[in-house]
Amino acid sequence: MLVLSTLTSPQDYTFYKQNGEDGINQVTDTIHINGMSNVASKDLITPHGVVTSLTDAQVEKLRTHPVFQTHVNNGFVKILMNSSSSAQEKAKDDMEKEDKSAPLTPKKYAKRGKKVPTSGTPEE
Image 1 (spheres, rainbow, N blue to C red):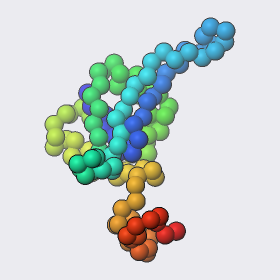
Image 2: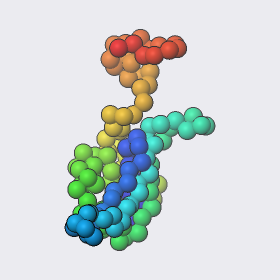
Image 3: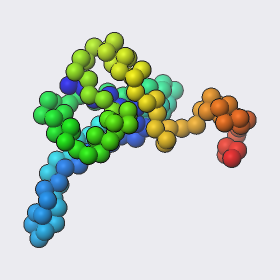
């Protein structure tokens, strides 16, 4: 199965065993979801949605994780049953385009009524 993410940063969903040795919660599993959506690569390619391949068991486990559920409900991650590229493109169209940590772009400056800086730090 595939998980599609429009999160800027990669996300590790960690699972714990409650009250392990000495009453300390212990990590039992971590499932990694790729990020870097809306971030340009060294080749200046900016993906709008990043895919991670997972096993069916990992997907079922993720469905129980509260933070994963929040990301799904907010439209930043989606489980894809169909792995075709057309299904991925359609899913991207239905998702949030980016999270708040996505980099600024000239289009975002224009929406804010700001001038795009040519160098240095952005105008506030």
